[in-house]
Every structure is written in structure tokens, then in C-alpha cells.
Image 1: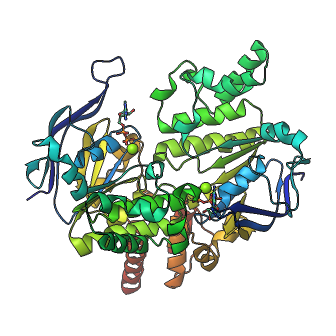
Image 2: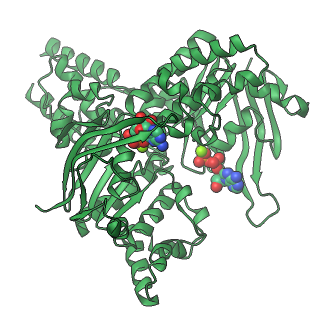
Length: 284
Length: 288
Ligand SMILES: Nc1ncnc2c1ncn2[C@@H]1O[C@H](COP(=O)(O)OP(=O)(O)OP(=O)(O)O)[C@@H](O)[C@H]1O
Ligand SMILES: Nc1ncnc2c1ncn2[C@@H]1O[C@H](COP(=O)(O)OP(=O)(O)O)[C@@H](O)[C@H]1O
Ligand SMILES: [Mg+2]
Ligand SMILES: [Mg+2]
């Protein structure tokens, strides 16, 4: 598979009030494949949002850092700045702070309009983006009247209209109720599966991580685990040391194993737990 | 006697404008001292509007809010004292941090209460400890923190006032699992040590099921349910209709039951589930 994002020995530091440099990402290396659905987990302050901002060129790595390549473009190169921003779409936690207009259609056209696209191309992109997040009927609705999940899907559509190759979502469901959260996640999953969009999902919800292809666990600016969700969540000690937790179905089966129950240990979802428990009880 | 009571509490945003919106519609509830109340409901159901009434941040359009038996709007000039007694951690409180350092920000409430510098320092230290905020962060500007770090500082600021009722609006959104656990433990400890009532809004069914005594379910500005954890989470179909959910373990055992495997009712936490399965299997050994 083709690499679309690559960070090689990247360093990034913040400057504190006294002008001293505080390292956040240290010797950080990572490659992400085109079309993959990657989840980034990590304790508060582990450097997830910093990583996201480095990837779309909002932040520049330290002087002594290795390169960050987005689809082959070095983010350090000034002439790549616009292209990098265009390729990497960033969606944040709070939809209210991201919406800038009052009507759904205008909101989605806002970005591409600034690129100076002709009218019919604009229309086409708005249609596509609305379809992608399943909000076609809302085209003429007022943005302020939408529910949280709907607002967040419009924020995603606005980014999609810029035709990014990579979508990075920084805790996109933190402000949403269970229904809104599911709406956003299924829209994102569909984008990945049906359009092959490369997706990086930053989240604190372990059950969201369970449904991705690859889970990267960050701890103090470094990667402590990088594997499939099954492999990552089968290591409770590592998860605990990273300040994380297990998805509840996984926690249940791990506890049952500790109590001596002969149960399958690769459980991540409610469905898998139901299957594992019923299998165990039938075999007994 | 109830500590917080609302009587026919109604609130309308933008009354007599085209944007008029009834956010609370004749809400009648009462909450005792020492209770932990979990509030859930779809976005826009009125949760934030309701909790902002408890400390007098919003004045009812009609109806009353009583704290300790007294209508808090009887003497509007004294509303400030209600804000010290009923401590409210806003939804997204990090947007309200403003001081030069986190230390000063956490001390803002106690300073407003007119406490001595020594007492303020003591309270800031205690609140920071409870939220596991390290010393380096206390000296930093709140603007230079990650999302989760800001959240902890904001909660500490309210805790430092040592309120009689602690109200938290979605306190765990954006916190890492460790931080969520810290906040849940904090709620239980605060209730235990002070016998204060704690009211928290959450979208995490797991959190509500694990610590709440009673659950208030809001729907379109009205009280849909206000009952114990078992009485609320047994209404799975109704909750789904409201855009809500039940804890993942509860769902697992419900689905097992649909398949004819009845492990027992009332499973809301991982502990409950492990216990129920252990009992079932022991039972089988005896009978088998
Ligand atoms: N503007 C800033 N100035 C100085 N330090 C900062 C700044 N922004 C973030 N930091 C620090 O950098 C580290 C990483 O922050 P970052 O926002 O990337 O964390 P995060 O993993 O996204 O955390 P969260 O889960 O809380 O959102 C933290 O220790 C934070 O305090
Ligand atoms: N400042 C405001 N002005 C106008 N309407 C508002 C305002 N704040 C909230 N509302 C509306 O009131 C209703 C209840 O909102 P809120 O209390 O924030 O709900 P929740 O906290 O349950 O998501 C929603 O319809 C919301 O759009
Ligand atoms: Mg972050
Ligand atoms: Mg709210």
C-alpha cells in the first residue's frame, strides 16, 4: 500500500513564557497508508492535537526535526503550504466554533468559494459533500437550528467540499449525545469505505477505536503501541499505563478470564461479547 | 427536606422574538442533600438551561427555584451568595479561564468570597490535588494547556469554593479515561465527605449507571423520567427513541436474554455482570 503521510524523527516543542523550549513530540516517526482508517488514542496532553496541527502545516516542526511529508510534499516548504492545507482537512471538537455562516449550503460552499471555483463546480461539490454526510434534505436549513450531530456533519461536509485526501478529526464526538455520535461516526466510516478517504480519528472513546483498522497509542509525545484494535486492547497493562481504559465489552471479558471463565479474549464490541458469552455457556 | 426544588420552572429564550424557544417547560423536581443525580437527554433537551437555574445564573421566565426552602429570586440582590453555595462547573468551562496562571484562576472564586490569602492558597492546593493537577501546570497560563488539562483547572476552580451543592455540566467530555475516573471518584468522595448533593450532566450511560442514585432524563424541555438507575435503564426502547442509550454491559445481557440466555436483571456495571455470570455458573454446577 502507498504511504500518504510520513513523519521521520520529528521533534516539536512549545516555547514557554520564559522562552524555554518544552518538547512535546520527541523523535516521532509514523507512516500512514492511503485509504486507511487510523485511530489515535492518548492521555490528555500526550500530543495528539499537536500531531494533527503538524500534519496540516498549522505548526512547523523544530529546527533539528526530520521531515513531515504529506503525499510527498514537505510541510516545511513554504511553496507547499496551500497544497498541504488543501490535502489535509482538519475537523475539531466543537462544531459551533467551526460554523461561520447561517445557512447549511453557504456553510459548505464557504471554503471552495474562497478557492475561486466557478458556480457549477461549487454546486457539484456542495451536492457531493451533503450526500457524503447524509444531510441532503438540510441544504437550506439554518445552521443554528441543527442538533450537535448534524452541525458536526456539516462541519465535516465543509471540509469535504475542499476535496482533501486526508481527513483528521480531533475528538469530533466529544460534544455529542449518543445518537449524534453514531451519526458522525457512520458518516466517517462510509467515507473511508466507499470513497477510500484516509481518516485519522483522535478520540478518548475506546469503543470508537475498536471499530478502526489501526490504533496508535501516544504517551508523553511518543508512540507506545501501534497495531490492530484487537492486539492493542488485549494488553490491559499497557492500556492502563498509557492512562487509557478498555472498551466495556472487552473489560467484561477480561474480568471473566481473571475469574477463571473459559471465554474468548478477543472481544471488542457488544456483538462479540454476546457471541463469546453464549458460546462459553453452551460449551459448559 | 429537599435541598433544591423547582416549581413549574419554565424558561423561554428570546421571548417575543422570531427565535423564541421554550427550553424548559414546567419542570418540577426536587433533590435531597447527599444525593448524586445524573442528568441525561439529547442535545438541546434543556439540560444546560436547567442546571444554570440552580445557582441563579438564569432567572426563570416563570415558576420558582428554591434552595434550602428559600426562593432564590426573592431577594435578587443576594443572588451572589447562592453562587457560592451552589457551585456550577459550566459545559466547556475551559472557555471561561482567563487569569495569568492556573493558580490564580483556581483562586478566583475563593477570592471573590473574601477569604484570606492563606485560606485561598490552602483551598487552591487542595482542589488541585483532588484533580491531580501537577505543580508545573499551576504555574502555567491556562491558554497554554491541552483541552483536558484546561478542563481539570476549571473544575478545580469551582471545587475551591467548597459549595453545598456541586453541579457539573458534562464534566468528562474531552477527558481521557484516567481523567474521567478522577472526576467520577471526585463526585463520590465529595458527596461522602461533605454530604453535599452532586448533580452531573453526562452522555455516558456507564458513568451515570455507576454512581448516580437517581437519573433525570430530559426530553424537549420536559422531564421524561426521574427515577432510580434500574427504573430508568430498564426502559431501553424508550431511551433509544429519545436518542439515548444504555450501558454496553446492560445491552450485552439484554441481547443474551433475547437469545434465551437469562443471566438475571439489573446489570449496569462490569461488576454486576461478572457477579451474575458467576452465580449462574455455580447454579448450573449444583443442579447439573
Ligand atoms: N500553546 C501552547 N503553549 C505551550 N504548551 C502547549 C500549548 N499547547 C499545548 N501545549 C502542551 O503540549 C502538550 C501536548 O498538547 P496537545 O494539545 O497536543 O495534547 P492532546 O494530546 O491533544 O491532549 P487532549 O487529549 O487534552 O486534547 C501538553 O503538555 C500541553 O500542555
Ligand atoms: N443562549 C441561547 N439563546 C437561544 N436559544 C438557546 C440558548 N441556549 C440554548 N438555547 C436553546 O434552548 C434549548 C435547550 O438548550 P440547552 O439547555 O443548551 O440543552 P442541552 O444542554 O440539553 O443540550 C435548545 O433548543 C437550544 O438551542
Ligand atoms: Mg487535543
Ligand atoms: Mg448542554
